[in-house]
Image (tube, rainbow, N blue to C red; front, top):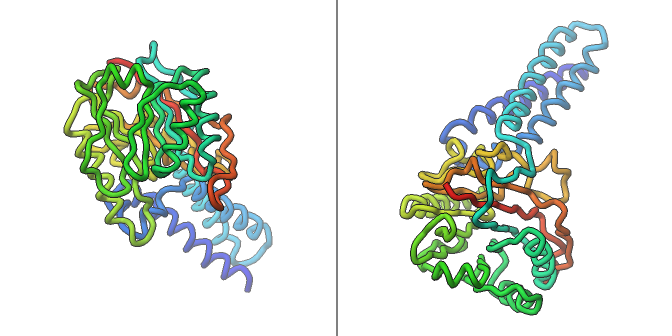
Length: 335
């Protein structure tokens, strides 16, 4: 009697996983209820592998259901292979150096849950060691941004700060002066901010600091608005650098693109390198913190790194206790 429930649950699970794998390659990947489920390829592979193991153990017992269990085992392994294959195609490298000397280094970190003094200190340690020019803090709020800015001043990292309520950008003083950066109005609520130079170039990009709404029930329309906003900015300028918390894996993006902008991590075989959540092992996480660049930038020459050596622990302000995102470091190269 125990074999029938296993077969039913197993086939429903495998069929659902196979359907989700296909949906990620169609426009239905953005539909409410589907969008969150097409993200975790590694989790899906683990579930399929679990079904295969249970089917294999059950098939060792002689009986009329043995052949059907073997078929389920094979199907589960095939589905597992589909998800693993997609992860490998997207790329799992968490450290990819730039081709040539970088013109700019940008660090992005959704550090919500970390105390502002610790955000500044931990960033400063990386900034000094890696010569970082720009810091992007999605989802950290204006109060935290000001506290981070004050702390960076004390640490000696001279900068200009741009913020608009929920996301902030810190640009090294010399670069901010050279570029003549100004904050542009008109972004959708909570989507991020835009920092425009006098003239966009490889050294002074048009910066879009991103915090796209997560694809949870009831938020898909807002999410679509946020992604459309990023896409419109990619269409409006050369040398666009959109970076931050996209709440999107490569499965959510059309061939790793938003209009003219292409995904850096995918271009350098790091598209599936886990950036979230920090409390899971990296081999089980997903990649939702991204950098996307517009022409004439060539994303395949950029450097990309998930900074897992950075301490993401709390406590933060209030009840928060650490960040659930890893920082990412982008090395920008001239075309």
